[in-house]
Length: 313
Ligand SMILES: C[S@@+](CC[C@H](N)C(=O)[O-])C[C@H]1O[C@@H](n2cnc3c(N)ncnc32)[C@H](O)[C@@H]1O
Image: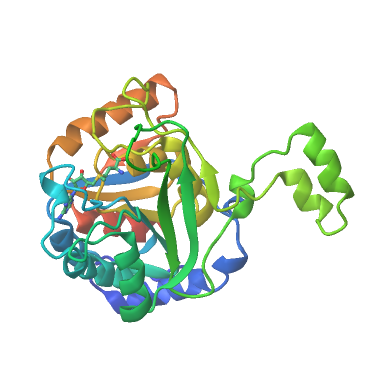
Protein backbone atom coordinates (compact mmCIF):
# COMPACT_ATOMS: atom_id res chain seq x y z
CA UNK A 1 0.00 0.00 0.00
CA UNK A 2 1.21 3.49 -0.82
CA UNK A 3 2.22 5.87 1.95
CA UNK A 4 -0.54 8.44 2.28
CA UNK A 5 0.68 11.82 1.20
CA UNK A 6 -1.52 14.86 1.26
CA UNK A 7 0.96 17.25 -0.24
CA UNK A 8 2.73 16.72 -3.53
CA UNK A 9 5.53 18.96 -2.32
CA UNK A 10 6.52 16.19 0.09
CA UNK A 11 9.03 14.82 -2.37
CA UNK A 12 10.57 12.25 -0.01
CA UNK A 13 7.28 10.40 0.46
CA UNK A 14 6.38 10.68 -3.19
CA UNK A 15 9.73 9.21 -4.19
CA UNK A 16 9.29 6.27 -1.77
CA UNK A 17 5.86 5.49 -3.19
CA UNK A 18 7.21 5.71 -6.68
CA UNK A 19 10.19 3.47 -5.94
CA UNK A 20 7.85 0.71 -4.76
CA UNK A 21 5.71 0.99 -7.86
CA UNK A 22 8.56 1.51 -10.32
CA UNK A 23 10.57 -1.50 -9.22
CA UNK A 24 9.15 -3.87 -11.77
CA UNK A 25 7.43 -1.56 -14.25
CA UNK A 26 9.89 -2.69 -16.91
CA UNK A 27 8.29 -6.14 -16.97
CA UNK A 28 4.71 -4.90 -16.93
CA UNK A 29 2.20 -4.27 -19.70
CA UNK A 30 -1.07 -2.35 -19.89
CA UNK A 31 -2.93 -5.57 -18.98
CA UNK A 32 -1.48 -5.29 -15.47
CA UNK A 33 -3.30 -2.00 -14.87
CA UNK A 34 -6.96 -1.19 -14.50
CA UNK A 35 -8.31 1.77 -16.42
CA UNK A 36 -9.38 4.38 -13.85
CA UNK A 37 -13.15 5.07 -13.68
CA UNK A 38 -12.36 8.72 -14.15
CA UNK A 39 -9.23 10.42 -15.46
CA UNK A 40 -8.05 13.91 -14.58
CA UNK A 41 -7.23 16.53 -17.19
CA UNK A 42 -5.63 19.86 -16.38
CA UNK A 43 -5.13 22.45 -19.11
CA UNK A 44 -3.09 25.44 -17.95
CA UNK A 45 -2.67 28.65 -19.91
CA UNK A 46 0.82 29.90 -19.14
CA UNK A 47 4.42 29.80 -20.32
CA UNK A 48 5.79 26.26 -20.27
CA UNK A 49 8.91 27.14 -18.26
CA UNK A 50 6.79 28.65 -15.46
CA UNK A 51 4.40 25.69 -15.59
CA UNK A 52 7.15 23.06 -15.38
CA UNK A 53 8.54 24.62 -12.19
CA UNK A 54 5.24 23.76 -10.45
CA UNK A 55 5.51 20.01 -11.12
CA UNK A 56 7.09 17.57 -8.63
CA UNK A 57 10.24 15.53 -9.35
CA UNK A 58 9.73 12.20 -11.15
CA UNK A 59 5.97 12.61 -11.21
CA UNK A 60 5.20 11.96 -14.87
CA UNK A 61 5.33 8.70 -16.87
CA UNK A 62 5.25 10.17 -20.38
CA UNK A 63 6.09 13.62 -21.68
CA UNK A 64 4.84 13.96 -25.24
CA UNK A 65 5.50 17.35 -26.82
CA UNK A 66 5.27 18.99 -30.18
CA UNK A 67 7.26 22.17 -29.61
CA UNK A 68 7.53 25.13 -31.97
CA UNK A 69 9.73 23.95 -34.87
CA UNK A 70 11.37 27.35 -35.22
CA UNK A 71 9.96 27.68 -38.73
CA UNK A 72 8.48 31.13 -38.22
CA UNK A 73 5.00 29.69 -38.87
CA UNK A 74 3.50 31.89 -36.18
CA UNK A 75 4.48 34.46 -33.56
CA UNK A 76 5.23 31.59 -31.12
CA UNK A 77 7.54 29.96 -33.64
CA UNK A 78 10.42 32.49 -33.78
CA UNK A 79 13.43 32.34 -31.45
CA UNK A 80 16.63 34.34 -31.31
CA UNK A 81 18.40 31.48 -29.62
CA UNK A 82 16.26 28.36 -29.98
CA UNK A 83 18.46 25.89 -28.14
CA UNK A 84 19.14 28.23 -25.23
CA UNK A 85 15.36 28.41 -24.78
CA UNK A 86 14.78 24.67 -25.39
CA UNK A 87 17.50 23.77 -22.87
CA UNK A 88 15.39 25.31 -20.09
CA UNK A 89 12.41 23.01 -20.69
CA UNK A 90 14.57 19.99 -21.51
CA UNK A 91 16.33 20.23 -18.12
CA UNK A 92 13.01 20.63 -16.29
CA UNK A 93 11.51 17.71 -18.24
CA UNK A 94 14.37 15.47 -17.09
CA UNK A 95 13.67 16.36 -13.46
CA UNK A 96 9.92 15.74 -13.78
CA UNK A 97 10.11 12.45 -15.68
CA UNK A 98 9.82 9.22 -13.68
CA UNK A 99 12.71 6.71 -13.75
CA UNK A 100 10.69 4.35 -15.99
CA UNK A 101 9.36 7.23 -18.03
CA UNK A 102 9.76 8.37 -21.61
CA UNK A 103 9.90 11.69 -23.38
CA UNK A 104 8.78 12.11 -26.99
CA UNK A 105 9.70 15.27 -28.89
CA UNK A 106 8.31 15.96 -32.35
CA UNK A 107 10.39 18.05 -34.68
CA UNK A 108 12.15 18.21 -37.97
CA UNK A 109 15.58 18.35 -39.52
CA UNK A 110 14.86 21.55 -41.40
CA UNK A 111 18.32 22.99 -41.00
CA UNK A 112 18.35 26.51 -42.40
CA UNK A 113 21.26 28.46 -41.04
CA UNK A 114 23.70 28.36 -38.20
CA UNK A 115 21.63 30.59 -35.94
CA UNK A 116 18.32 28.70 -36.13
CA UNK A 117 17.63 25.54 -34.20
CA UNK A 118 15.74 22.32 -34.84
CA UNK A 119 15.49 18.71 -33.67
CA UNK A 120 19.17 18.15 -34.49
CA UNK A 121 20.11 20.78 -31.93
CA UNK A 122 17.75 19.19 -29.40
CA UNK A 123 19.38 15.77 -29.90
CA UNK A 124 22.80 17.39 -29.66
CA UNK A 125 21.86 19.14 -26.40
CA UNK A 126 20.24 16.03 -24.89
CA UNK A 127 23.30 13.93 -25.80
CA UNK A 128 25.96 16.29 -24.48
CA UNK A 129 24.25 18.19 -21.66
CA UNK A 130 21.71 15.81 -20.11
CA UNK A 131 21.57 12.17 -18.98
CA UNK A 132 18.75 11.35 -21.42
CA UNK A 133 19.28 8.25 -23.59
CA UNK A 134 17.98 8.26 -27.16
CA UNK A 135 16.03 5.05 -27.86
CA UNK A 136 14.56 5.73 -31.29
CA UNK A 137 14.14 8.38 -33.93
CA UNK A 138 10.71 7.76 -35.41
CA UNK A 139 10.16 8.89 -38.96
CA UNK A 140 6.60 10.02 -39.51
CA UNK A 141 6.06 9.51 -43.24
CA UNK A 142 3.01 10.91 -44.97
CA UNK A 143 1.93 10.89 -48.59
CA UNK A 144 0.00 14.16 -48.52
CA UNK A 145 1.90 17.44 -48.45
CA UNK A 146 2.94 20.61 -50.26
CA UNK A 147 4.45 20.47 -53.71
CA UNK A 148 7.92 21.90 -54.42
CA UNK A 149 9.86 22.99 -57.49
CA UNK A 150 13.32 23.91 -56.20
CA UNK A 151 13.81 20.89 -53.90
CA UNK A 152 12.33 17.41 -53.22
CA UNK A 153 8.89 17.85 -51.67
CA UNK A 154 9.06 17.04 -47.95
CA UNK A 155 7.09 14.00 -46.81
CA UNK A 156 8.40 13.30 -43.34
CA UNK A 157 8.81 14.68 -39.85
CA UNK A 158 10.57 13.09 -36.95
CA UNK A 159 9.95 12.37 -33.30
CA UNK A 160 12.67 11.35 -30.88
CA UNK A 161 12.06 9.00 -27.96
CA UNK A 162 14.23 9.69 -24.91
CA UNK A 163 14.42 7.81 -21.62
CA UNK A 164 16.13 8.24 -18.27
CA UNK A 165 17.13 4.64 -17.53
CA UNK A 166 17.21 1.24 -19.22
CA UNK A 167 14.21 0.26 -17.06
CA UNK A 168 11.84 2.27 -19.22
CA UNK A 169 8.26 1.01 -19.60
CA UNK A 170 7.44 -0.15 -23.15
CA UNK A 171 4.36 -2.14 -24.13
CA UNK A 172 4.93 -3.20 -27.73
CA UNK A 173 1.91 -5.50 -27.77
CA UNK A 174 -0.52 -2.57 -27.53
CA UNK A 175 0.78 -1.09 -30.80
CA UNK A 176 1.58 -4.12 -32.95
CA UNK A 177 0.14 -3.94 -36.46
CA UNK A 178 -1.70 -6.92 -37.97
CA UNK A 179 0.03 -8.95 -40.69
CA UNK A 180 -1.79 -9.46 -43.98
CA UNK A 181 -2.98 -13.06 -44.36
CA UNK A 182 -0.18 -13.80 -46.80
CA UNK A 183 2.57 -12.20 -44.68
CA UNK A 184 1.32 -13.99 -41.58
CA UNK A 185 1.72 -17.38 -43.28
CA UNK A 186 5.29 -16.47 -44.26
CA UNK A 187 6.12 -15.06 -40.82
CA UNK A 188 4.87 -18.20 -39.09
CA UNK A 189 7.28 -20.25 -41.23
CA UNK A 190 10.19 -17.95 -40.35
CA UNK A 191 12.22 -19.83 -37.73
CA UNK A 192 13.82 -16.61 -36.45
CA UNK A 193 10.44 -15.28 -35.29
CA UNK A 194 8.60 -16.30 -32.12
CA UNK A 195 5.20 -17.64 -33.35
CA UNK A 196 3.41 -16.41 -30.22
CA UNK A 197 4.54 -12.84 -30.90
CA UNK A 198 3.90 -13.21 -34.62
CA UNK A 199 0.26 -13.99 -33.90
CA UNK A 200 0.01 -10.71 -31.95
CA UNK A 201 1.10 -8.70 -35.01
CA UNK A 202 4.18 -6.86 -36.29
CA UNK A 203 6.41 -4.34 -34.61
CA UNK A 204 5.32 -1.05 -36.25
CA UNK A 205 9.03 -0.22 -36.76
CA UNK A 206 10.38 3.31 -36.51
CA UNK A 207 8.88 4.46 -39.82
CA UNK A 208 5.20 5.25 -39.37
CA UNK A 209 3.04 5.95 -42.38
CA UNK A 210 0.17 8.01 -41.04
CA UNK A 211 -1.63 10.66 -43.12
CA UNK A 212 -1.31 14.31 -42.12
CA UNK A 213 -4.56 16.06 -41.31
CA UNK A 214 -5.89 17.74 -44.44
CA UNK A 215 -7.72 21.04 -44.20
CA UNK A 216 -11.05 19.23 -44.45
CA UNK A 217 -10.17 16.34 -42.13
CA UNK A 218 -12.98 15.52 -39.67
CA UNK A 219 -10.41 15.51 -36.86
CA UNK A 220 -9.46 19.16 -37.38
CA UNK A 221 -10.38 21.49 -34.53
CA UNK A 222 -8.75 24.62 -35.96
CA UNK A 223 -5.18 24.56 -34.62
CA UNK A 224 -2.72 25.21 -37.49
CA UNK A 225 -0.29 22.43 -36.51
CA UNK A 226 -2.63 19.84 -35.03
CA UNK A 227 -1.20 16.28 -34.90
CA UNK A 228 -3.28 13.25 -35.95
CA UNK A 229 -4.79 11.25 -33.08
CA UNK A 230 -3.35 8.03 -34.54
CA UNK A 231 0.28 9.07 -34.09
CA UNK A 232 -0.24 10.32 -30.52
CA UNK A 233 -2.22 7.18 -29.65
CA UNK A 234 0.74 4.97 -30.55
CA UNK A 235 3.07 6.81 -28.17
CA UNK A 236 0.52 7.01 -25.34
CA UNK A 237 -0.36 3.31 -25.56
CA UNK A 238 3.21 2.04 -25.80
CA UNK A 239 4.98 4.37 -23.37
CA UNK A 240 2.40 4.96 -20.63
CA UNK A 241 -0.02 2.69 -18.80
CA UNK A 242 -3.64 3.14 -17.68
CA UNK A 243 -3.82 5.45 -14.67
CA UNK A 244 -0.37 6.97 -15.25
CA UNK A 245 0.35 10.67 -15.82
CA UNK A 246 1.07 12.09 -19.28
CA UNK A 247 2.32 15.64 -19.79
CA UNK A 248 2.21 17.91 -22.86
CA UNK A 249 3.53 21.40 -22.22
CA UNK A 250 3.02 22.61 -25.82
CA UNK A 251 -0.55 21.35 -25.90
CA UNK A 252 -1.85 23.32 -28.89
CA UNK A 253 -5.32 21.92 -29.44
CA UNK A 254 -4.83 19.28 -26.74
CA UNK A 255 -4.59 16.18 -28.96
CA UNK A 256 -2.58 14.48 -26.21
CA UNK A 257 -5.35 15.23 -23.69
CA UNK A 258 -7.96 13.83 -26.05
CA UNK A 259 -6.01 10.57 -26.43
CA UNK A 260 -5.45 10.35 -22.67
CA UNK A 261 -9.20 10.55 -22.03
CA UNK A 262 -9.93 7.70 -24.45
CA UNK A 263 -7.00 5.61 -23.18
CA UNK A 264 -7.50 6.11 -19.44
CA UNK A 265 -4.41 8.20 -18.63
CA UNK A 266 -4.33 11.35 -16.47
CA UNK A 267 -3.14 14.36 -18.41
CA UNK A 268 -1.38 17.62 -17.59
CA UNK A 269 -1.28 20.19 -20.36
CA UNK A 270 -0.01 23.71 -20.84
CA UNK A 271 -0.05 26.24 -23.66
CA UNK A 272 0.73 29.94 -23.69
CA UNK A 273 -2.25 30.66 -25.99
CA UNK A 274 -5.68 30.71 -24.39
CA UNK A 275 -7.34 29.62 -27.67
CA UNK A 276 -6.19 26.11 -26.66
CA UNK A 277 -9.24 25.92 -24.42
CA UNK A 278 -11.59 26.39 -27.38
CA UNK A 279 -9.70 23.86 -29.50
CA UNK A 280 -9.72 21.34 -26.68
CA UNK A 281 -13.48 21.75 -26.21
CA UNK A 282 -13.88 20.81 -29.87
CA UNK A 283 -11.82 17.65 -29.28
CA UNK A 284 -14.17 16.80 -26.42
CA UNK A 285 -17.21 17.33 -28.67
CA UNK A 286 -15.68 14.93 -31.20
CA UNK A 287 -15.01 12.34 -28.49
CA UNK A 288 -18.65 12.57 -27.49
CA UNK A 289 -19.77 12.18 -31.12
CA UNK A 290 -17.49 9.13 -31.50
CA UNK A 291 -18.68 7.77 -28.12
CA UNK A 292 -15.08 7.70 -26.84
CA UNK A 293 -15.59 10.21 -24.03
CA UNK A 294 -14.68 8.09 -21.05
CA UNK A 295 -15.29 9.83 -17.71
CA UNK A 296 -12.94 12.69 -17.15
CA UNK A 297 -12.67 15.44 -14.60
CA UNK A 298 -11.21 18.84 -15.34
CA UNK A 299 -8.79 19.78 -12.56
CA UNK A 300 -7.80 23.42 -12.05
CA UNK A 301 -4.67 23.34 -9.91
CA UNK A 302 -1.59 21.16 -9.87
CA UNK A 303 -1.87 20.70 -6.08
CA UNK A 304 -5.39 19.31 -6.51
CA UNK A 305 -4.23 17.05 -9.35
CA UNK A 306 -1.46 15.43 -7.29
CA UNK A 307 -3.52 15.34 -4.09
CA UNK A 308 -6.24 13.31 -5.84
CA UNK A 309 -3.64 11.10 -7.53
CA UNK A 310 -1.91 10.30 -4.23
CA UNK A 311 -5.21 9.60 -2.46
CA UNK A 312 -6.08 7.08 -5.17
CA UNK A 313 -2.81 5.15 -4.73
C1 LIG B 1 3.23 22.78 -32.66
S1 LIG B 1 2.00 23.43 -31.67
C2 LIG B 1 1.31 22.02 -30.83
C3 LIG B 1 0.16 21.36 -31.58
C4 LIG B 1 -0.40 20.13 -30.90
N1 LIG B 1 0.51 19.02 -30.99
C5 LIG B 1 -1.74 19.69 -31.44
O1 LIG B 1 -1.89 18.52 -31.85
O2 LIG B 1 -2.66 20.50 -31.47
C6 LIG B 1 2.95 24.24 -30.46
C7 LIG B 1 2.16 25.00 -29.40
O3 LIG B 1 3.10 25.50 -28.46
C8 LIG B 1 2.58 26.70 -27.91
N2 LIG B 1 3.70 27.44 -27.32
C9 LIG B 1 4.69 28.12 -27.96
N3 LIG B 1 5.55 28.65 -27.08
C10 LIG B 1 5.11 28.28 -25.85
C11 LIG B 1 5.58 28.51 -24.52
N4 LIG B 1 6.69 29.22 -24.29
N5 LIG B 1 4.90 27.97 -23.50
C12 LIG B 1 3.75 27.24 -23.71
N6 LIG B 1 3.26 27.01 -24.94
C13 LIG B 1 3.93 27.52 -26.00
C14 LIG B 1 1.91 27.40 -29.09
O4 LIG B 1 0.91 28.29 -28.63
C15 LIG B 1 1.37 26.21 -29.90
O5 LIG B 1 -0.01 26.00 -29.62
